[in-house]
Amino acid sequence: GRLTGEAAEAARAALTLTDEMARLGEADVLIEAVIEDLEVKRQVFARLDAVAKPGALLATNTSYLDIDPIAAATGRPEAVVGLHFFSPAHVMKLLEVVPGRSSGAEAVATGLAVARALGKQPVQAGNAFGFIGNRIYAAYRGASEFLLEEGALPQEVDAALEGFGFAMGPFAVADLSGLDIAWRMRQQQAPQRDPRARYVEIPDLLCAAGRLGRKTGAGYYRYDEDGKRQPDPAVEALIAEARARKGITPRALAPEEIRSRVLAALVNEAGLVLEEGVAARPGDVDVVLVNGYGFPRWTGGPLHWAGQQDPAKLAADCAQAVADFGPQKKAADLAGLGILAAADKA
Image (tube, rainbow, N blue to C red; front, side):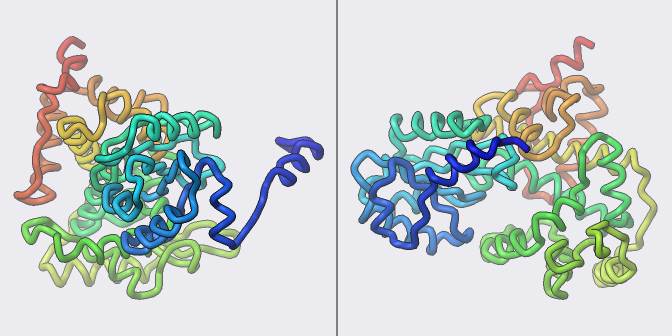
């Protein structure tokens, strides 16, 4: 009901489908969206470089990967940028525009213009693993996984964060997105993983058991014929076995502790993203997390929210979050960044 029949027909008439790479030479903007595999993307960009016309923008829809080796597969790295769309792309307004080391100003400007022409909310992000959003969300998800090891169940973590204002908790989101995407990324990162980092094997065990989320009918939850999620005793047993292998005695976690620990991990990572220049300003982080990851809009975003909290308590919560991740984890200087200034004046 959003389009008239005439408008829908005009849109269909304007769409040309092809499976011939050579036809792409007619396009001004080429956006690649193949699997998150660096070598596959490099191969695609080498082929695009051979057919794209001079001045065309070559964009990769990568969620995590370094733009530079993708651009280096072409003879025109200045024409390559990242355009990270969020799923489902026809609904989600956020679009991260990611320049690589060699991206030209014209390519970046074109990427931003394409975003606006598509009705998206563009945010320019630095070329670092996961950019702004996925980098921060990985910390949020990781802190949630720690709680599973310690005694919480997926439905308890999700309920606590949905109670804060998220439309869906992290485990419901993981099931919706598909657990295999993050699994594949963890497998690729395994050789570089810091041995001091705390690692939770529960998501890997679910994937190995074929529980990939909604698309397989089971992930952290099982799903009935109507797609409604249900707690699954099989998942509880798998989590209990994972705890036992590590010698962890489970304990009850109150919703307040769940929320404070997960949100502190998110805020600390957001601070690191600012310190490292991956995000240019706090507002960019807030726009990304609100528009791409469901952080409650009424809060103004995680860093705006952090500025309204008691600074001493938030600092203590962030220190605990850093310790949870392991000795390799850095603590963000939230006071130095001015994130806690609003709370100091409150």
